[in-house]
Length: 251
Image 1 (cartoon, helix red, strand yellow):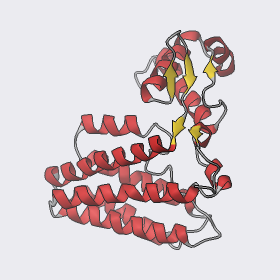
Image 2 (cartoon, one colour):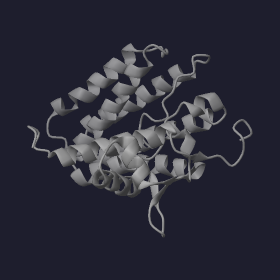
Image 3 (cartoon, one colour):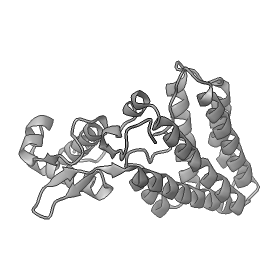
């Protein structure tokens, strides 16, 4: 037992889950490919039990699909699946914003979200050099929103959803240095963030919910944009798992 209280077995299982999820989103396995437990044991240098638990977990998350005959295969996602995931995240984050407005105890609870807004503004105009930092700040803002909802059940629902390709708040944030669209979208996102913070501070639950749901639709706009550029699309984690009905550029 280590100092964190986790057993070596638990630590290995979590390592295998994280590694296998990363491999799936990176495209190490093709959509529809069957995963053999023994092959993964050798590839991940892990024992069979953690590998089996990792496969079960990723199947529950929706990245893998359990086969009736036993075993698992890599799930393939349709564009409609991705749009649905974005829409559902908007609903859940809208609920989180409303809960935050209703359950706010002290104005200082919003300090971290306000700092995220300030730090985001300082990165404008958006460039390739500050892109990574922008994504980190964006992720921190959303995580703080979930925390302020003060609902463990809602947080679990959101965390389960965002394991799917393209569903996380930062999954469809991208930079194409040849256009000014990233800066325009970053400005729009910042306006949404500030509006959400303002609505929560004023205990305006309905407004906070509406703003958070509208904010999630930026990801749909980004998805539509990225589908016209195969190179950009292929750089997004999980792109290899998406089934495209027609060639990119013909949508």
